[in-house]
Image (cartoon, rainbow, N blue to C red; front, top):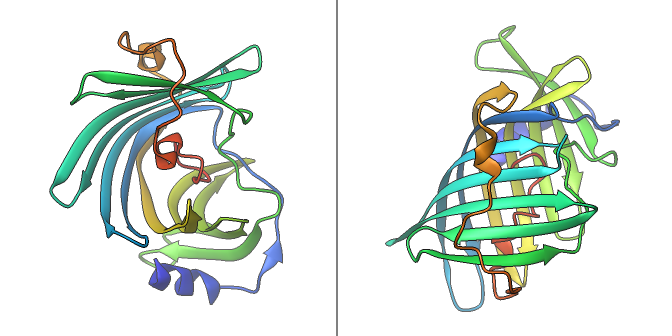
Amino acid sequence: MFAAAVIIFICSVLALSSACCTPDQWEGEEAIIGGYTGQRNRGILKEFVRVAYDAVNTRTAAFVDYRSGEHSNKFKIVTRYENGEGKLYVYDLKKDKCWTKTLDRPFRKACIPSEAKSIGSYYLGLKNGFKLTGYEFKGKRINAFVSVEEIGNECIPVTEAIYGRLNKVGIVQNIGFINISRGIRNTTIFDVPRKCEKKEDFSLAEELTRDNFIMAV
């Protein structure tokens, strides 16, 4: 992450930017690797995620293949908003169990925050080849470097590197976006798993809400 950040940084001087967003509907894959460190434990996290994003109908879906050391699991994570109220559904495929949680935030659009700073354009790989634009964002808990391909008024995410603290645990994550395509081929990906219970459950780990991401789902 730090090498990529240095490459981006030397390309230009920091400048204020206006927000840009992904297409309203898209799907693809995310490859994530990162680490965490707390008072009692630390480790490396790996995820391969099949994602769908639908800002038109305010919903997202993620099929997560998760690995940390010898531990592995698979989740289906769905967020849906109806009449302004958001619900998070996390289905543990290994335990065949689902948790439901009411979200106290509005639908998170996949956009570069307006307070982010543009750190210029650069080429990925060969010069004059694949042109990207980098952005830096500094938040209260999370900082991020994001690179996107700008097409018209839209930003197609390419990489996202975040670092900061969640619940007194230091985290760093690098995210690569793969095979992004516009539109949703099969809307059943947003279906709520049948196993989901109606009662609320607030015992979920915060990272499963995925609120620490900027463009990722």
